[in-house]
Amino acid sequence: MSVDVLVLSLGTTRGLQVADAQLVELIRRAGASVAATSVRIGLGDRLRRGYPANDLVEALAARRALDGALARERPRAVIFSTTTASLLGGVPPEIPVGIWLDSPACLNRPGRPNAVLHALERRAMARARVILPWSAPALEALPAGVGRALVVSPPIKLGPAPAPEREPVVVAYTPDPKAKDLELLCRSWEHYVALAREPGSRTGARLRLTGIEPGWAREFLRRRGITTLPPCFELVGMLDRRGFRRELEHAAAFLSAARWEDFGQAPLEALAAGAALVCAPGGGPFPALALARQLEPRFVAATRSPDLLARALALALDAGDLRAYRARARAAVADLTADAVLTRLRDEVLPLLLGA
Image 1 (tube, rainbow, N blue to C red):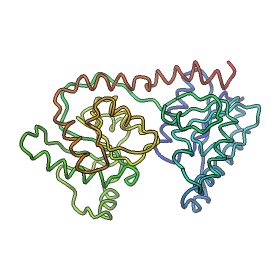
Image 2: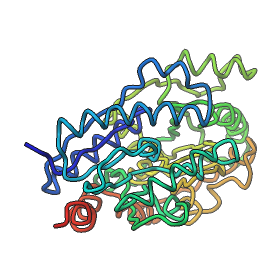
Image 3: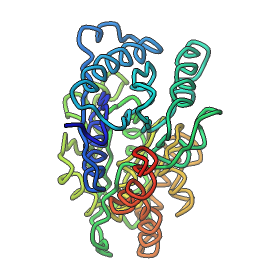
Image 4: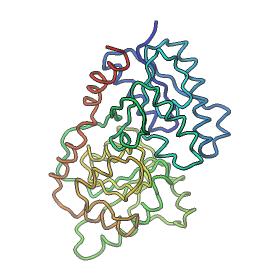
């Protein structure tokens, strides 16, 4: 028996693993048979010491996984998850290919040292029947000469309308403390605590840091000269998706200090759950940053300054009634819900790949 679609999952981060599982489930719900194959880096992992070597090692592992999966599953179409997984190809020309990616290599792997990646990416995308970037900014960053492209994002859960009253709690998520800039987040919180003590401030809050083990967070901060956590700075640790969503549903704000976001699902989920999104400016496609600026530009710091980010947070927490903000935020992410993504897969993507 053959399957309609084979999803080749690179899965190098927890976020990619979750997103790939969601994609497989939505393809199944759209009426196609689907199989997923994960990639194991194996002994080549010791060679991952920076770019472009990391991508080439991962692309070789993806090619090995693909060869076995093609023989085993005999798919009608293949979807590579990430541009890296697609770099070395290997799919027979009669089998249509899609590439599902958070950000192209030409954007998040810039510079002459990565020229070989850019060339391989252009070749892979030119051969693909459809490119499936996760966001409109990622779509705009695709290299020239690609085939048809459709935005298909990981789905965002849009639960019941949020309660008008929120606890004075701020949630942050830093699975990679360097990329998410845990140091800036911590120093910004120090500034916020000082601001909250000033006359006229209506809110004193506490911050709950998720996505990272407490010991790792403390060690990371210690190496950057922060040996004592600020007041009301709570290390929550790792949460499952349901636990993280509960945090967001009760929080007044979500605080992002990320340097770079290829997608940034956590801040989008925060907007869907009714938390005000407070951001430092960061690089990458980062669709939630653009949304935050549209919803309330005062909640986005002008620069990556601890003081300015703290003041943006204080404005959000002292803002009072945010029901109109929350309604506009939920409307802005409505196209990212599972039902919306399912419709796009069923009506546009699968017909392109399967010839229906």
